[in-house]
Length: 451
Image (tube, rainbow, N blue to C red):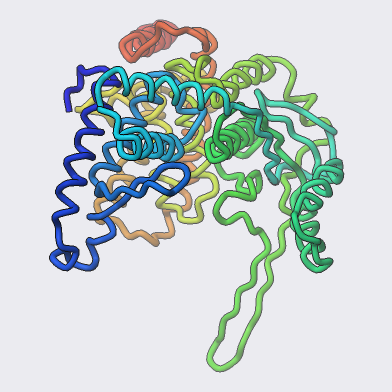
């Protein structure tokens, strides 16, 4: 397919391909196709009524999905509807317009299809509000706080919303099921409330979940011990169940161990007020804009997207139960923040940039100290990935703690750099970031007397 063609031209090619595949498949004996391949070989599209059912093959459907991805990307609508939902609409339109009514796939007819698709997506945009359960801290203070577009409240204060959701079921709710749902909500201390504007519930779920998780990671960044705090998490994440049992035998004798955790971090009563003071208040306001960018593509910038990616890796590392995976993910945080699309000597570049970003922080040591620590973490990560280090070595836990600390401090230092540069700048790129890393290095060297 010609990459320089318009979206209408590309879709016209796909419709013609569908017609060719229909002719080919109608002359194909299904018995000549291996049984395991028949579903893909004869994959169908149909109109909305289901009356027009056309076998076009999986390759045609894949081409439609690829077209939809490019279509949504060009319009900056990837947040409004999922590719699969968009493809469903395009398949229905193709089946109706070019098979049921037998229109010719010329540019005018295709343009009308695309225009109708535009209007249908825009008309279906509605506010979708999701309430995600999460663990944060003990108590109910504050009664409400916001990070970006995410509003947090103690679950104890959201009883009316839970009751309304239970009451929305079409059939009467059995008491046993009601009690089970209510107990599930009571087991989490907080609710993250997010509203996003989309044309598709699947897209709304994806965007709201990412916004809530990013906001939670912001809390973890400020108030956790490096990347070791695993209690700040969402119900949707792996390993969210903090109560667990272990059944084991020593010889013939059985044993049962029950681990029970409160599921909340131990923050001071005034933790939110404390966070909104001094330099952290400035950082938090910048991160508000980063979180907002999750569901507002028009506000996304090079720096915000880079930081969002690093926050996701940082959170994944913090809840991972395997020390080796934690090390690999924390190193990925460093690469995401300080890597500038290098193909060679990436480890050296990352180590150098992290060293000079953290050198001015108390207790972090000299640039050489930090560079040595980063190199050691990098070496362990590489040995694990290439299978030359014991994956259950006892020293991995200690190295994971070091990796967590470096990743945590780099996130904070990079945030300060972002604030200095301008979080909302839309003219920033890797070349400018390389320049600013060099400026940071030069400033540190001058302060150290040229060392």
